[in-house]
Length: 123
Image (tube, one colour):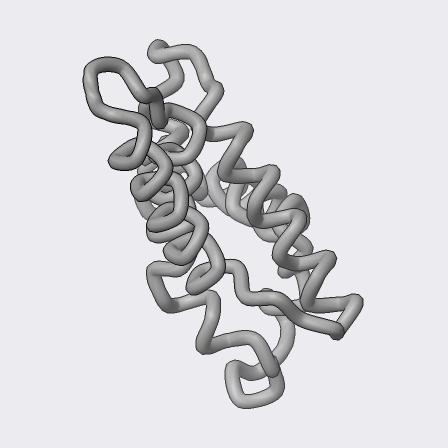
């Protein structure tokens, strides 16, 4: 979620827009506020659910436990999670893409570790 503050016309536009701008800057997307959509090379990635998928995979990875299952099943779960992770975070030789992937991954880890009182931030 970009901001928990709902836009109420001109009544709270300044504070709302400051929150939105801060979010874009924090994600490294401040140029998206002034560029035309056709000029943004990564626009498709912004509108897909890759962050939601990454959140789900990362959450599964950090919460996987053997518990009452046999070792081979547990190792199979780990292997499956690794493959799923590689579909949302594919290996790349492009340093810029690597930086973007690392930033996304650590943003997701930050969201996963938030206190339950801050659940609205995760949504």
